[in-house]
Length: 182
Image (cartoon, one colour):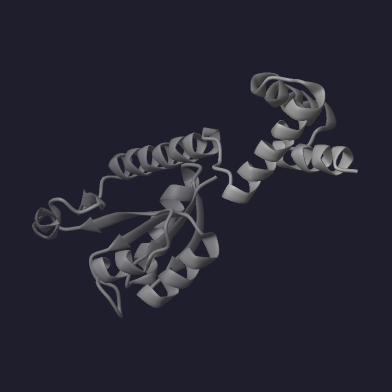
């Protein structure tokens, strides 16, 4: 579940927003009154949503946004006048006075977007390091040389051995190189 940090200069306001979000099923991990507290809470989480007002005790929203770690989105709640200056920024915003259904809908949209991005990143295969590629290439070359396989057959052999043994391709290539280089 995506963690949410609520940062407002008045603790009562932050608690009210937290209560609204918690009643709607969201996980609010921290409420803060200063930007420093908000950044510390964000660093602990690593990713999530920073829900904040225009100005905190020690910094404004733009400074806070610059200090947030990657994987954090910002939801700025401010007057319409302040929000008109946001054009082109990467910040989601809600106009004050706040409507509860708009807050819930916006946070829900942000959470779903973040979850979708996370799934897409996990679905992408990770890139192998050049040393790992060389190891696989070496194992394929050895199989081709010793067992008279084509490159495609050697690759399929490594894949099958990898799946059968529950190891990744690099570990399988290491085992093949260790066994055939005796």
